[in-house]
Length: 170
Image 1: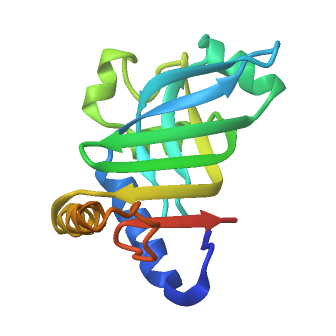
Image 2 (image 1 turned 45 degrees about the vertical axis):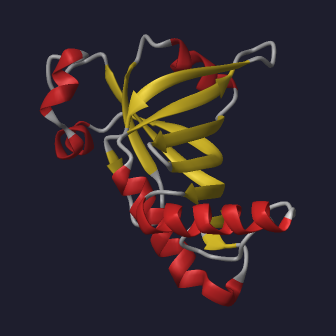
């Protein structure tokens, strides 16, 4: 994925990956056959350097059927004051070696192990994404900007600060 604005492209991409790797649970939203959306909380198994996300799921899961007819998905991640929203597509991956490489013991709650015959991998490839980071020093900067706007009787304007907000596209 590439930043929407080239002025601070490496900084935006770096912040994006930093946030993706810091947030371990998200909501994966798929399309039902009639067009409705359905979201499910899922643990992120792995984040690739290009922003692709890996998840474990059961081959019997409803999302597997949904993805067979419509691979488009949205993934929303949040942790405290950090938020990431990604649009893209999911592919189903049946790869025992990859499952073993990505396996984490907490997944044993859902599967007997990485060789469980009901396990399949989901690889989400983002096409577009946006993040907001209001945590730590970034949050203090944003709070200061908001207070300043309030005192002046102005509305807070979007700030071109890759530490606070960024957009990416494929």
